[in-house]
Length: 204
Ligand code: SF4
Image (cartoon, rainbow, N blue to C red; front, side):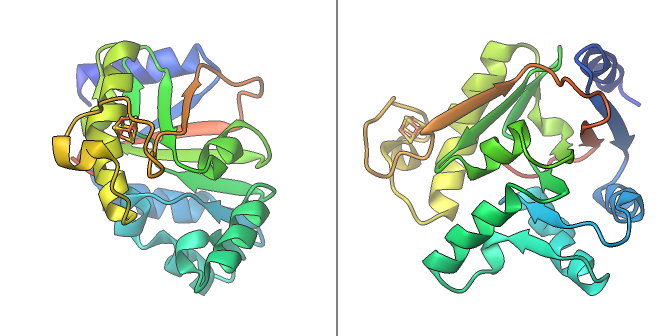
């Protein structure tokens, strides 16, 4: 394991957040699927990393109830799924940046993902590639706004100025994707949140 990952896991521990490390996304997926108890209701945040894992399909096949808005057919259905996911037992998500000292930075358009990470689900699993680790909180926020936000906007079919500029210009666009910027500094319950770190460049 890389020294930086070791440092990050140590620092997460000091914030009541556990860390797990895997060399590949495939190994992380195996661990995740085996860790989720039978019958658990799962909320899934919109994440390229989770999409790459095909996690919702796998968990549905295992008989779990899965609330993943990307599987909805209409806007109304997506809204209902997002609300239900807030009260799921487990919540799976990616994030947009993490500082070496363990602060987790999330940019969120409507706020459903950030809300579920903060409160509601009993267990929250955040899966990141090592490309999301930054030296400082400032750099993690910079990453979220200048690297993640433009790509997330494009993926969602939105067109705030950062899509063309490829950097944040602190816009007031109707398509603004960073209406919410959440920094998770720690957890009350040390068994609630786990950051799964994968030795790969994945997600935005
Ligand atoms: S403020 Fe606007 S330009 Fe900056 S990241 Fe958010 S959406 Fe993009």
